[in-house]
Structure formats: structure tokens, C-alpha cells
Image 1 (tube, rainbow, N blue to C red):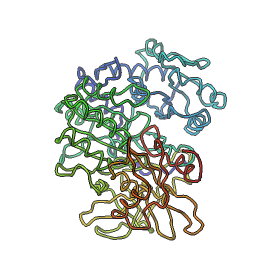
Image 2 (cartoon, rainbow, N blue to C red):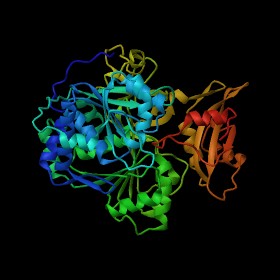
Image 3 (spheres, rainbow, N blue to C red):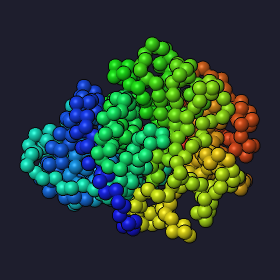
Length: 548
């Protein structure tokens, strides 16, 4: 299934022990806000422990997998922490999955229990008969008109109320597993298997610049007790890495997490939530969230006086969108983070105060941590200033591999000639003289046109620098002469008269000629996934002649 490296010495750093220590240090602070529900650290710990005792009483054993199928709500995090406290492994499940995809994840992860919202229960029930390992299901009440049921399921609140407080919980360790399912751009989702101590170091731990890493849960708790009680609105779904890691990093610091419980993104509702909860920091996924929200705030400049920082993960903010935020408030801090399910959080790019409101350059240069390298085709790190395009990779604290997939594990987590294991991000880039990395794009969607390689994200950045472009996605289309043709799908601002020729002229001063899109399709809306990333499968279908 995977080859486990030697056990590390930092065994106390289990996520369960870390959160319990923080909750003991700041019990009365507000930990989590979602809709009308507000939980202190003490209440969140108590409810997670009750859920853990229910799972143990229901026969869930240490190391077994428990899936969570839910929209953002306090119970998502309660269940996640409760699974960890029971010594089991949480499995994130995308609430947009149809029965076949859901069946695959529950079967591939070997889940023995499932927590599901009632509105999603019908899909789970369709998959259930094909899942002999799934022996326990709990339902979260959601008062939806589309609520369903699952035969033999237990209601979540009944489970917590009836949990026996005398039930002993197993000890937990930083060597216990953390499993994150990621969809990628093609194929069924894959489970990325980490040790908990490693994912804490690689994605969750937050510390001041220059400060040492915490050596124990007690030290993490001491820092939480001293910290500023920052409030962050996590807009990303908890079922995905960005939302989950941001929420966990805040909780491990004794800070406050605010969740939107809306089922769709509505900028006016998000602004009201930021204002009402006096949010300091906003987590978004690229322009798809940041652009409409900034435009709304420009119509109500007095809103959200406490908001001072906007962080984007998954895809960088374009100059045009950063300009909108600067126009709303000049001193707002804007930052992009770079990372992935297979690598953790690798680095960041911060927009400076002197940045123009619009411009041709995109914020795709990232300062990376010391464990990140740019590798050549032989897995050798490229030196700073090298003109060679390389693969972005991480060594050190990286996943054990893909769960149940040794072939994909060998491909994504190779070992070099010196015996170092690497986690390949799937992205390509070049290295600056200062060691920073310029992100070019994903190798899985690279376009080979007449022998030249074109990275879609680079072209998308140039397109979105045009003030009339709302959104863009770039994919290859078949071409008899070139092999593949650079093709762009573009949505324009209302009232724009920009045509394909004008857009190509704009790009020619920003890109080499072979990178400029030969074909431009104007669409009403560029489709994106649940977390705001480009839907490349849809775009490829349109580029091949499908309907937009």
C-alpha cells in the first residue's frame, strides 16, 4: 500500500492532543462560528470528545477510517476532531459527488463509518449496498426540503447525547495517519496519506517569523494563550485542503474561525458576515471569490472596518483584482499562498503597497520554504538563476504516499539517487537569482504547440490582466499543423466590446508569440470547481467543439 519511513521522535504532535492542549489553555475563547451556532474551545472539545466516545462505543477501532459528507458547519469540525480523538482517521468527502464518485471514495478509503447531512443521505444510500465495510452511519439534521434518509442511520445529536462518558479513548500519536482525498484534474479522487506530525509541520503550524517550531502540545498551547485573538472567515469548503488547513491552523493558535453556511457564493452575504463578525482575515480561492466581493465592497466602502488581510490559496489573485481591493482600501494586506494536498503549504507571495492598480505582471513569484526545490528531469535540484524549467517539489516532511495506489505513489513521490524522497507538486516553474520560484503551471495540462511548451496559467494571467476580462481559462485544442493549438475561453465584463483580435494584441506585448491564444471563445461564464479552481474538463470539451 505504501512504504513508511522510519518513525520520527515527535510522537506527541497528534492533532487530537494539540487541539486538546489549546482548548485547555483558552477554554472560554470563541473557537468556531457558523450561522447561528457559536462554540467556545471548551464546548468544541467537549462535543468532539462525546462524538469520539460514541465512535469507540460503536466499535470503531484506532486506525479505521470515518468519512464526513457535509457542507461547512460546526458539526463538520466537531466530527473531524472527534474522529481524531477516537484514534481513527477522518476522510473528507466532496458534497458535490454523484453516487459513483461517492462510492469510489468510500470504498477506496475503506471507510467503516460515515457522517452525512440529511440532504446528502439519499446519494449515500444509493452507494451504500456496494460498501460492505461501511457499518455505521450518522445523519446531521439540516432542515432541507430535500432531506433524505439512510437505513439504520443514527442521528448525530442522539449519538452525542447518549455517549457514555466512561468510555476510554485510545492514546494518539503524531505518527497516526491523516488522509486527504483530492480530485485533481482527471480520474477518480486519490487519498493522500500523511502522518499527523508531518501535516502539522507542513501545513497547519503557524509561528512568528524567526521563532522556533513548537516541540510539544504544551508549547503550542502556551503560544495560543499569548496570541492575538484574530478572527478569520474561511470561505473554502472544509472538505478541501485550503479550507481545512486554514481552519485547523487558526484553531491550533487559539484564534477564531468563522464559516459561511451558505450553499452558494453571494458577495453581499459574505460582506455582511465579515462586517457582523468583525473579521480580520479573509481566506478566498482566487479571483472567483475575490473579484465579486471586492466589487461589492466598493459600493459600500464603510463596511468591514476590521478586515485588514485577504489571503488566496489554490490560484493567485490577478493584478486587476488586487487593484480592486486596493481601490477599496489601500492598506489591506494581500497575499497568495502556494501548496497542494501532496506537498502541504510551500510558500507565499505578498503584494506590496506600491503595486499599481492594474498591470501586466502577475503575482506568480513565490518565496518558498527551505524544503522546496525545483528539480530537473533527473530529480536534481536546479540552482538559483537557472533558466531551465523544472518541477516544483518538496522533501523532508512529505506524505507516506497515495492510499491504496502504489503506482501513483511511485510516480508522485520518487526517491532520487541520493536516497531523498520527494513530493512532486505537478507544477513547473523557474528559479530566480534570489531562490524564489516563478510558477508556470501544471504539467498535466501543458500545451505542446509546434514543439513549444505553453503553461496555461501563464497565459491566463496575461488574459486576466486586461481590464475587460472577468475570467479566463486556457486549454489545448487539436490542430493538424501544430499538434495542439492554444485556446482560450474568456468571459468579459458587462458592456465590453473587446474582440478576439484586440485581446490577442493585448497579449502579444506580454507573451511570446507562440503562447498567444490562436483561438478565443467568448463565454457567459468560465466554469470553476467547488473551490474556485478552473474546470479544465469543461473547457477542453468547449475547445473541441462542445457547447459553453
